[in-house]
Length: 114
Image 1 (cartoon, rainbow, N blue to C red):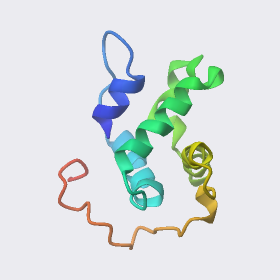
Image 2 (cartoon, rainbow, N blue to C red):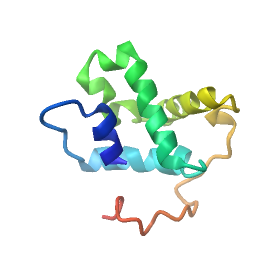
Image 3 (tube, rainbow, N blue to C red):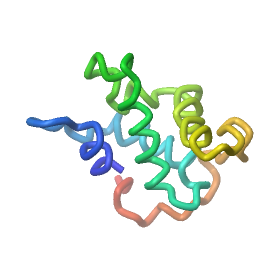
């Protein structure tokens, strides 16, 4: 996910590092929103493209960093709704919600290993 974020929103020059805080909010976005998608990385890319279209979020660098964009449940839901809006399907709030106790099959994918 971080590689996609840097590709879409990282800009030119020095790239921000993947910190523990960024890893945490990206994992929350994955478990709450993206894991239920047929193509979760495509959905994540669509979220980032929606951020890129937002003049407000792109006006200040800190606003489009993961710890700002996805820092709470409401923000993660709001950005996932952008993907649903493009698809014309029900919003993220109407989807079944995954919790931290839900098994989603990403435990061994390396990106979120401690």
